[in-house]
Length: 283
Image (cartoon, rainbow, N blue to C red; front, side, top):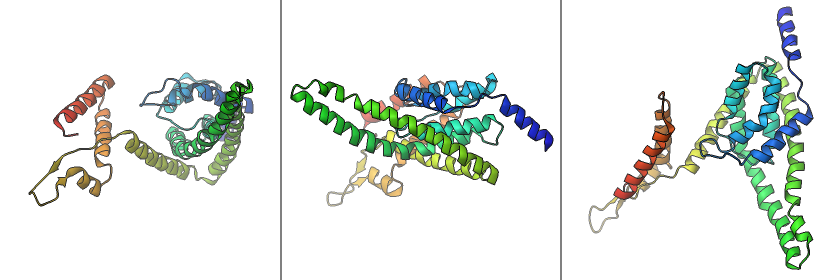
């Protein structure tokens, strides 16, 4: 025990402590870069990883550990940047504990991000973009219509409010996450947390797959003039709704499991199959 405690003290002393300023700065970088470098493969992952670089450099002076941390944050990520700010704080808290040698696995951090991004995106979109933005832009339009120059500056209220909310939520997420993770580590329930977060993350990725991938077939048969046509898509939906999109996602995933796969070739194959299906009327 003494040796382990000494190693923990040495490990903790070797890392520069994370401050509130670091957390706020990291979230602000994410706010600026979240929508840059977007692709269907990663969406906001590049922006999130960029915001985490200063934090990870502090936590992982070893290049190998730093590279591994970057890789786990390059996985698909998408949420509402402002009300999703608690995720940034929680992830920083988890990375900090992992860097200190606590038994937190990389997939646990990824699962936590994936599990929280959907619910917080729903809250953020409802409050931020569906409520605050129409009110502020409506006020700006009304003032501009009367020739009031303040109408142009009223629009700046939206990013100002967003930044204030995001900075505070990110710190709140960090402090809450830090305290919660310590309690979980002491109670020995960290494995349950990782399993739960990973399971929720799988549900979220499944829902996203069915949302982004749209595949259907117009095939139908008639067995007589008086009988209703046999519509294949309706039969598939009665078995499992979204069966074709699921088959496509699982097929691509199976293909990607093979080594040395070229993403350009996979994209060309998808386009070719889509064109053939559209021309022949199968898809």
